Length: 277
Ligand SMILES: Nc1ncnc2c1ncn2[C@@H]1O[C@H](COP(=O)(O)OP(=O)(O)OP(=O)(O)O)[C@@H](O)[C@H]1O
Image 1: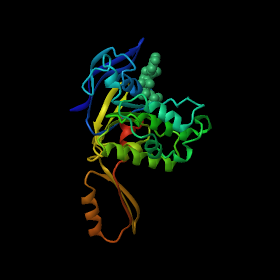
Image 2 (image 1 turned 135 degrees about the horizontal axis):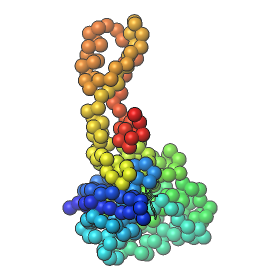
Image 3 (image 1 turned 120 degrees about the vertical axis):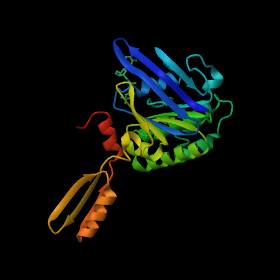
Image 4 (image 1 turned 30 degrees about the horizontal axis):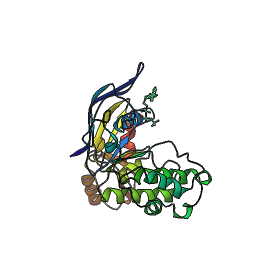
């Protein structure tokens, strides 16, 4: 079964079309990343999928149901980590996580989740005393306490230091191995590349490309840049046949500093959203 199926999704705010006909399929068990510039329509799309916003048109199925009409049982199968931080400031981390555990029929263990999110040392601390990145971890803990089948992560690592981000990636991979389907929105292309099985790029309310991090936008077949230095100086060529280029070079004599660079996900992304000539 597909975890998410979207056909022709539309949403307008007055004269502003935020989502202009989006088609999307997220298979059960995959990590799917939604990328796009500010204002592209990512939050609007995900909030419609979560049942928090009404759509103006299109078909939407999330875990087999229409979010506009699905009930409490359906909601209990979702985990949601929003962009906004937790604000139960006077409670401790453990009290907050325990409180949320009470909302679900089959929650994970409170201390297990605290540990998974790297918050053990802060379990007794008040939320108000935490740093921004630590609060974000609490948000993640609250998103996964209910053992969701489908987890929405909206810019989950904003404000994380590099080590916390790597720990968070490990957590996402562990959840994925357990079979949790994850829809991730992020502005970090390295995060999408590290975590996503597939991704879509959304710009001005439309999906402009979809694929794996390695194939999206023709990344795997795009020209590579070969650079090297020989007796006549430094050279650079762009070619769709880097293996041929390197083989030719090897025949011609000694070279140094040989590098073959495929376009990065960032190069492809910037092309797709029209940010680069
Ligand atoms: N409640 C609202 N009322 C009016 N316009 C809105 C509302 N929410 C979003 N919009 C508009 O819809 C468009 C898409 O916004 P959305 O928040 O979905 O983008 P996004 O891709 O999530 O952006 P970001 O990366 O900045 O979070 C924007 O032009 C935004 O101004």
